[in-house]
Length: 215
Image 1 (cartoon, rainbow, N blue to C red):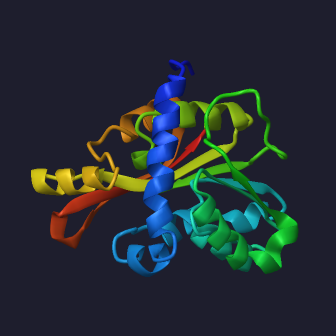
Image 2: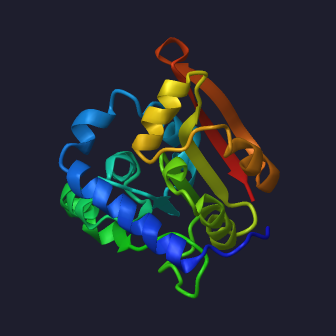
């Protein structure tokens, strides 16, 4: 895999924009997002993590810790790493997973190629409604995932896919989300598909996808 390096100025702007956005949304995120972040439980179930319960899952854009909390609850031997650029979201996540603190580590930094190393090699890299918000930089995030995984490691993505309605594209763009079917073609090219589903939400207002791929 090869990709162009993200311009540092663009990266700084991206980080500042998302941090500012979630500074306002962190406290209400969990109460408001359940109505449209579909497929999060399904992607975790599809990973069949009970077969690799002594392994490590890295979640990029872990937010308030919704997915990590479910992973910790149902897979008591799983090691977890959560990466996010929002300190406010990580505060919520850290409090939420306090009783699992011995096996979960949070890192506040952008997930992109660089000279920093993870504390452990992940067996799974999970992106849950994260990649569509990394604009620019989603290609670099996928590059980092590819670099961090060993051969046979898994990438798991659940995210927005597309919408036939221009007004919805504009609304999602206002919320820093790009959804124009730009992720799946790249994921399919870079990873061997294990699971690929595209489903509709609210009668076709938008579509979302689930993808699991092997390096």
